[in-house]
Image 1 (cartoon, protein in one colour):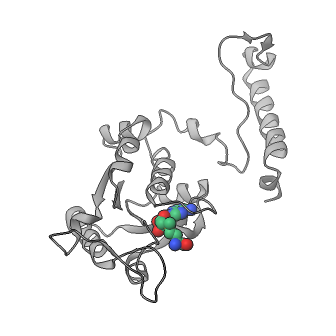
Image 2 (cartoon, protein in one colour):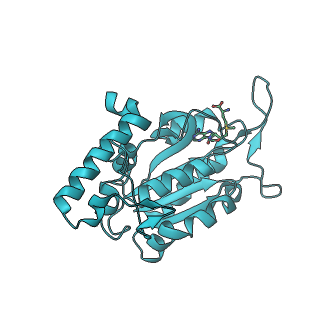
Length: 227
Ligand code: SAM
């Protein structure tokens, strides 16, 4: 899978992309991620301008369409493929595990990060396939949202986690939350690990985990059960 991220602040993304599981996935050539500074595509060679005031008046600045269009064309030329384009936006559908599972099947994604008051509508109409939001609140820019989306997709790609079991039982994979987890020591501050987990009986352990999963979903997120 290839992911191209178009942003005015690539430095906001680089640490996240080069750390932990995403960093390792890139080193192991399981995923290829490129950040592009939209400013490099400005038609204004002197000031590298990428935004202007909104037509009709109002506060703030709007990102111009041409630098984004040029960035998009350059990505197509570099990669030789037509990416599926996602605009990170508070106006998009809220990201879910189901959406990340669907997007991991796409061979090439282009993530567009807005900033300021947003992006000129004409470029959105021209290139965007889908808008994705990470929640009903407004961020300063799309970079954090692009990192959330990238992380949630990359960890689901083949070979990225040691074993698909690592995510198959996780919260939201089957509409439930994951069971509680414990590690050493066996007793911590007088609180022991549940006995069944020490029993070595995998049928009993699985039954206990299924039950716990259901109980904690009922307690923490009853809305998931209603769905
Ligand atoms: N004026 C826009 C509106 O009211 O819909 C909000 C612009 S916001 C300050 C700047 C950029 O941050 C957006 O263009 C978008 O790329 C990103 N952004 C903000 N909130 C987001 C969210 N909840 N999910 C994804 N991206 C978001």
